[in-house]
Length: 92
Image (cartoon, helix red, strand yellow):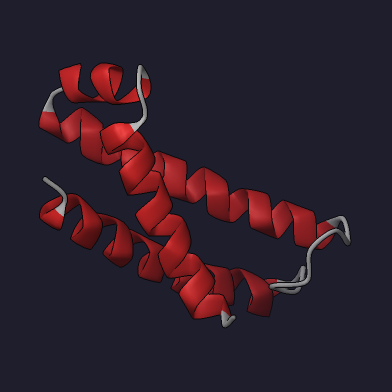
């Protein structure tokens, strides 16, 4: 599985969790639209930061713990955001 595909899957999973997971979806849908968007971006960012932290601690080798790894992770963050928003738009 490629890193790009994994980033896209992460974006889709987050979108589906916030849309359909009991309790979480009810809380999320009560928020106004700008707060929903910021929360989703924050969740994606925390996920990306977690991957980078795991790489720095030697637990995960998707990216390297340096400037090049941070830039690569930024690209993955954008891909995950695109997949996340596409899923949000097409989910009923």
